[in-house]
Each structure stands twice: as structure tokens, then as C-alpha cells.
Amino acid sequence: MTHRSQFRGVYGVLPTPFSADESIDFASLRRCVEFCIRAGSHGLVVPVNASEFTTLNTAERRRIVEQVTGTVGRQIPVVVGVSAETLDVAVDFASHARATGASAVMAMAPLRNPLPPDAILDYFAAIAAVFEGPVFIQSYHGYPASQLPIELMAHIITTVPGTWYVKEETFPAGQRMTELQASAGDALAGVMGGMGSRYVLDEFARGACGTMPACEVIDAHVTLWEALEDGRAAEAASIHDRLLPLLNFEQLYGPLAYKEVLFRRGVISSVHRRESAGRRLDRFDAAELTRILANLEPLLSDPLTTSSRDRVESRR
Image (cartoon, rainbow, N blue to C red):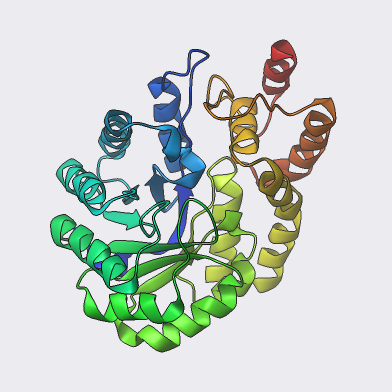
């Protein structure tokens, strides 16, 4: 198992690409993995919120994890999401993650099922016991998870062996990171940000060890992080300013936005979702996204090309 000190940097969250018949497009998933590795992602995360994991059944989640860990090999760490509604299901996912060679697992509190603090501690203890490696507690700001108080997370971290990391994405994330680090002390190996890396400058200043954004512009996120690590604060702030319009667009549309960009970049074959309620980006959204991406193009390792734009037009 991966040592607790190895988790640092930008960990791209993979989508779940779907075909028109709503089956999983594993060829596109493999291209996502290869794209992230080529773009310098320090690690990968799947299947979690940005992966639309709540639309997947147990067999699909397992197949996705198997393909991702198999494609990655040992090139970079893979953090596997094992969130579930019950302890037994989460433990089963953690056991499977261990068998596939995952580097760590990550879980929110039991989904759609608020539990008392002792039961939540037991839930994370059971996951850690079966995985026998690093566990991320995912502190998420809304449905389908229950929010976790700082005091409870610190208690879990200092009590349960293996619960060394936190992904903090409850508002205000930066202040919560500072409070958690003070409460958990050396038992906490690190805390990473989420929420699209919108707050990464503040999080890095507070001692965050990394960030977990959706992967559609992972190359730009990596460039920003490396500027922070090198002490080039002004350059990092400039990159962040350039990224913000896309991050705001993502906040509005979530997986619709992630998949549209990955489609335009030629990484996935379609933008289909299982639970989109019929929603699609309209022509105004498409035009705004085109403008945003044109401004970001200098930060992209695989720039948008004429053929990329033709893919968008041919679909409309």
C-alpha cells in the first residue's frame, strides 16, 4: 500500500463517459486516463461526485475501478471513491479497491442516511480496516452526504488508523482546513481541496497538500499548482484568474460542462449523461464556453484545434 506521505499535488477526478444508449463508454474512459497522465496529473480519483457515481450500479463501479487502475498501473496514485448508503456496501467497495491495487480510498459520510457520530466513526473504521491503507474522509457540502463537523473528523483521524487525509469541500473550506489541522495535529497527513479548485490559492496558503478538480483542463490546474510549489505566487494568481470563468461555468453545469470540454478536446466521444433531466447547453452557453476556452488555450497542453471545433459544430 502507498505510504501516507505520498499524496500531494493535483488529483484529477475522472468522469464516467456514456454512450447514446447510456452504457459506459470504456474506450473514452481509457482516453481520459491517458489524457490526465500525459497532462501531468499527480494522481486520479474515481468514481466520485464528478463521475456521476450515484447513477452507477455496483458492477459498473467495480468495472470502472478495474479499468482505471489497470490502465494506470503504477504510474500515478489512484484514489477510489467508496461512498455508499450503508457500511456493508462501502466496505465491499473498499475491499474491491484494495484487490485492484488502488493507492487510497475516499468516502463521504453514509449517503442519504444521517447517522450519529459513533456510527459514522464505525463506518470509517470499517473502511480503513478492510482497505489497510490511506483513507480520505470526504467532507462534502451537500446532498447526497451528511456534513461532518470539524470535531468529529478530528476524532476519527486521531482514533482510526489509516484515516490520514481529508478532502475538504464544505464552506468555508479554507477556514475549515485551518481548524482541522489545528484540531487533528500530526495525525492528519494532509488535506486537499475540492469544489473545482476555485479556492486553491487560499487553500495552498493554509497548508493544503493538494486539490481534486474535474479533469477536463487538468493541464492548466497542474501548471497552476507547480507555480505555487515553486513560489511563483504572482504567476499562480494570474493562471487562477484565467481559469475562474471556466470554474464558474462548471459550478453552473457540473458534468455537463466537464464532458463538453472533454468532448471538444477529443478525449471522449459524447457528452451523454444518465441524469440530465433533458438539460443541455444551449447556443448561448456554447458560445460562452468557446470564448472561455479560447482564453485558456495557452495553458492547455493539447490546444483546441480546428478539428476540435468541427466536432462541436457537427454535433449541433
